Image (cartoon, rainbow, N blue to C red; front, side, top):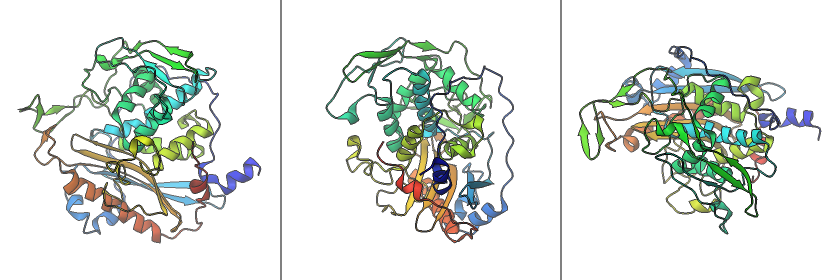
Length: 434
């Protein structure tokens, strides 16, 4: 079938073949002022307040630091999507800890960097070893286990990040990218306020600026690419200035009676991560400047593991009952171990859980209802105001709220009139095993 015709029929995820384009990070610039709070949508406000199960949190939305983005998707006669965004308390100046949300841009940029390197034989399936060159760095030796899932590769680390939000895998790809190139590339994509500056490890701010040396190998064990250790010689600025949260925090087994300092922590506004997910799922429907330089197969790979549950992935690490189907699905399923996955409902998402913050950024597509929409939300549940004490209301307040929020918008979307029903066949048939 000709490409143009296939684009019209399967237009949801027709992808630009951009793997060979040069990677040109923007020159460092002073970040512009963080965008002001967005106006609330009357429609979204009404949907939230009309649901008795959501009302207790919505009535105290400021206390719970709730932010929500609901994006309607309407198709035209050519199956091209058109997006209408509705906001509730969206405010990039209100800091929340993004936790594992940062794994999605890191995954995409790791694939992009492999393309940019243009090294013969170097792919996401190439095994590597990691050395050390500074404090707080740990090595990864070269090994060729019989189980390919256990190879240390960019592809396997992305699977771990997207399937169960693995922190160690994120650390390694953060190191592969390097602190400054990682952030400069995000700035050049139109996210000047974003800061991804930390491993998920007890490293200080200076140590996080230093990243490890890498060696990639061919299938026979011969080195094919070596990347030296690197350092970001200039510390990055932080758009929000000093940021503190809570009344106290726990450290070293004792409570410190002062607010917890997030000033030099990762910063990823809800609008930015929503736009990044959109750019990955709908690359032809964002501006050229927002498109990641990825091949069609890269996009398909990301899409597959954003959607799959740990068990459905068949990834050998996640066969145990610990990694249940809803393990990384907060919206709609509420991360419930007892939730039964609805066969017609496909959710493509990334989540965050840390320091009392819960976040989920998702695209919903349902083949039975012929409906689709995007939904992003964050909530803060820390009643005692103490950080790092592990006493957060994740299961009693946060996850039930996110689960019901997903259901409320799903129900509304299932009954919302559409002039043109979306053709979602490409979404459900074109993933394949990558």
